[in-house]
Image 1 (cartoon, rainbow, N blue to C red):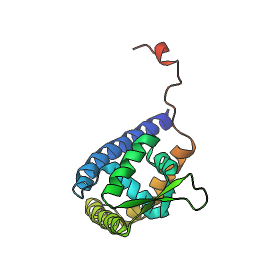
Image 2 (image 1 turned 30 degrees about the horizontal axis):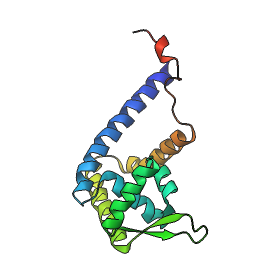
Image 3 (image 1 turned 60 degrees about the vertical axis):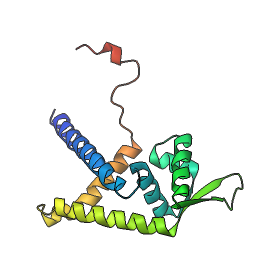
Image 4 (image 1 turned 90 degrees about the vertical axis):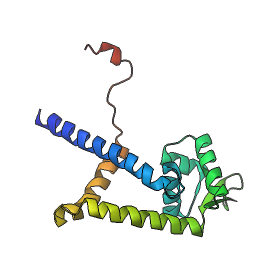
Length: 159
């Protein structure tokens, strides 16, 4: 029973963090003229240099048509370009532009400074361990996605 209580406490803390950070992040990133999805897409491209639309869609958790619209917006803003893949002419790769790389760097630096201020009261050891702990949680969830209720069983739950 202690594991369940601990799991519920962790779940609630992570949910609260995700909600608050996402909404806070949405407001701040939009100040740079980007939507949250555009920002995440550019961050992925900044890390990888270029990517096929299908890879970008998978990373962002969007369907391909939504990703295409997102890339169209980035291309219009001159933050990304489409190029034919060297390996397969049928594949169009999306590549980040240098102005977009500078913009993402500025956004990350600004948000990191804000996060540094928010975490100032935490002990140094906690701040040092936090990135690794968050990466481990993310990797664990990605390797074994949470399944809360099996399909078809919801009708068996009584309130």
